[in-house]
Length: 118
Image 1 (tube, rainbow, N blue to C red):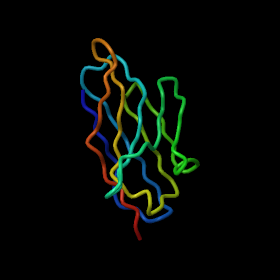
Image 2 (tube, one colour; image 1 turned 135 degrees about the vertical axis):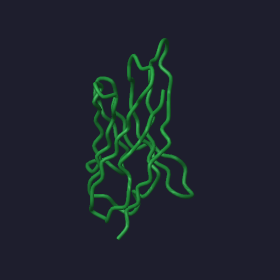
Image 3 (cartoon, rainbow, N blue to C red; image 1 turned 90 degrees about the vertical axis):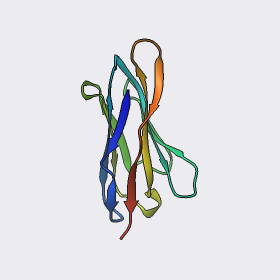
């Protein structure tokens, strides 16, 4: 099983980006999908989650600006980021619980850089 993020890049403050996370491999079910980020010199922090029942949760710092959703038919999760701020600059990682042939296991993507700067 592999998770691959895409959609990162350089954006001006106030701009938007949409990150994608595609799960591939032997997948029988996709569990909770989560987004984390890590800024230089800081610990990795939780950003957002969408559960199998599409319940969502967000870090306070991104509430009202970020939206996460999923498309299970495509084994894909998304993070729509609006009104971006300089402090959103970080490497963004997706992480998901995936069931192949038994219990759910947790996987991480390789990360995608998001830079918010004028």
